[in-house]
Image (cartoon, rainbow, N blue to C red; front, side):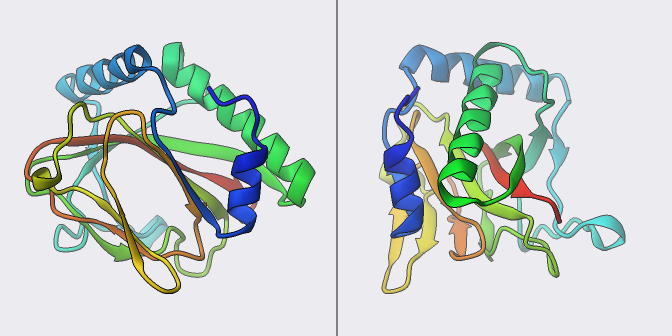
Length: 197
């Protein structure tokens, strides 16, 4: 994994987002994908909802995917990635004084026809999520399969293909984004670097 975090920190300062192709080795992506699909087959994923607390609801007209939240004590490549996120969190705190206290991550599986409408990555009334982190796990993804992340920048929309090994980071409150409809199963490891809410 990328040892020098300076480029990530600089990109989050300006322009506020960063895309890194081939962040992990192909064999690491295969291990993460197999872990996620195995746990999906075992019934560990839950239908994704929106909102929190008593306002938490399933709204399949807004979001159609299934998720599995990762524990702090994950092993293998997932554990290594979480450890790297902890290092990144520390580096961001030292450089930018962000008061980040944790990372929360989940596997997200979009079935054929899955999508997530335009949104911001924070619950209403909360600004705890500061940095969104997405790592794609899809081998040989083709443009006609859809499923792109559309990130709404100040002057244009950026579309990122969910290609295996691509890492995307952006400021959670600053950029609206959506997942375009996918024509086949789409898998990612997604989450946030957070401060206390």
